[in-house]
Image 1 (tube, rainbow, N blue to C red):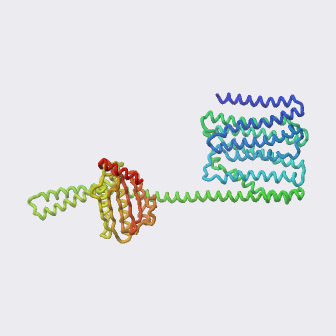
Image 2 (tube, helix red, strand yellow):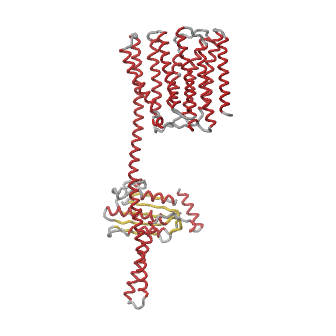
Image 3 (cartoon, rainbow, N blue to C red):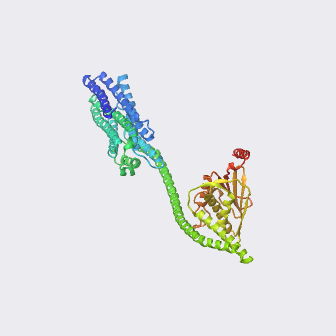
Length: 600
């Protein structure tokens, strides 16, 4: 159904209800019949308003639900006071007393609306902790109660005076209505899209209520007001307008198949100042208490009993309000400390990342240099190897010369193998998993790292099991894992003057296991060695990413890597990789799988 048609029908229904009330007010003469009809109409109007407002309280956004629920609560509070008024006039057939118990309910019915304004449902609050914002709302609520006790209650409990009671109550009510009107007006002017239309209607409803309350107060004081005269029609219109705003907002959300703020574009200035004005109002409310107390002592001409009562109310109200201020500040300080801690951590990580990027650039350049040098070395190596083979095969050369030529050829082949491994290790290629002999991977990694060994203080012992099942993995990545572990162990041994690194391979159930054990000082925090950026090396020598990368590579291959300190001293790294069961016999593979499952 088109939105314009819905609005026309809605306006027609409200016009029919309002026209009926107008007709009754014009036809019926002042008396009990008009009073009864008017009271019932004023009880029925907030119900219609709630029906329209609560249509929007079923969304997935709790703040929007709270906004519309608070508006409905405000109408319900007013209706509750109206029920009390109707009880006196219709049921008891008595005039409502000058000091009516429902006056405080009518006065406080605007507080939920002010709280709804502070929620600003069209915005998205970005803060980590919103507890201090809720305390702002509680502060404002308590402040309005304090104002009622300070300005109104004194003329009923201490020095009864009906005229001053009504005057002060009307003054506070007008101030509250103007605050609500200003709040809706500000939201109307600072929003866009569907929320702008919604706030415009809510502003119109608040304006109608404010304009309706002014003449009623004056005619009540003059004694010319009677229930329910034409003065009540603007009140009925204001409640119907609130309901209309709710229904229009609901229809807009249906038309756009999304929540109302989906088309909203908040101004940048408003977005930056989000949530600021409720806090400022709360601060002004707290600061106003001592000012009111000073005015009461210095400038007020009220009787001493009234002044003493107001001072007592101020002192008592200062206790909960001050407590809330301290609580709010503690929440705010905690939030700020969390932000500072996170900022410091982020800055530290950024510094480490910058260092790592610089180090990565150096390693890339070094890798390119090494690759180029390796290619250049390969050419003379090929020539050396060829000439050595020719010399070894030449029958005219003596036996000693052929023996030396054979040794030269063997060393040239060994050097060529090392250069080939270096090129493979430094080359950045996509992962390609094939069946690998883990013993060959370990030998390659140890051979690469042994090139940099100085002296005989550090010794590497390799104890491999002769027959091992293959693993499906990327050779370059596994060489990188073994190389990093061996390199870290050698660095630790060199720091203490030397030692032995033992590398073992064996089969354990359905896994191939590698262990790297050294005789060094061990690791202070074995549970943190795989954390990114964790390193015990001096600044500039280690980045703390090597073992973290190893952990990720082993995990990608379906294996596990652990670290612990041995009882006799030194650190041990244990790497488990799943073996390729297809290389086992069928019976043996089934046994290994069953054993692995029972272990888990």
